Image (cartoon, rainbow, N blue to C red):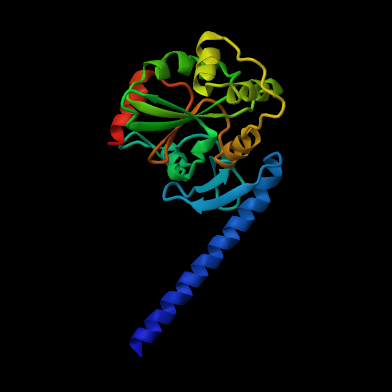
Length: 238
């Protein structure tokens, strides 16, 4: 009988807590969404620090109070460990399942023994992507690189990607353009590409800029990193 009463009390407490959390989320959404320029709040979560609530918007994190009266934009750090708590949380929520990437829609390049694997989303008109290709990825060895041509900068990006995808040697055509500035011939009109599907994939993965590098543990690094940084990341996965 006592156990039954305890179970009822616990269940009642959990239910009340759940209802309160839902009410708080609704209050925050109602207060903030009209001020976010049309962006929708994906979730609201109470944090263990400072009475703040984490608000997820388009893959990013903002902070607010319980009523949504104030909005905090920036990163929260643990002063004892110098840990960027916001960065760690963003990395956590943006992790993907690498095994679910449609690698058949990517250019595959094997360097050395190819034992290590990364996937890179790049736009053919992206200057930072060209820098990454001309330095870090050119020097990186013993890796398999899957390149998704993610066309987000201009209509011309779609044209270049189609020409590269429809070339006899796609990887060579990509490197000729990104490293040497040599364009491939125009693609036959009937040649089909995965361009539109890759754009949809990138949006689903919340890729807001190029380059974006994904690793087999599901984590990512945005931007053109140097060889030392990339090697250190790959080493950490062992």
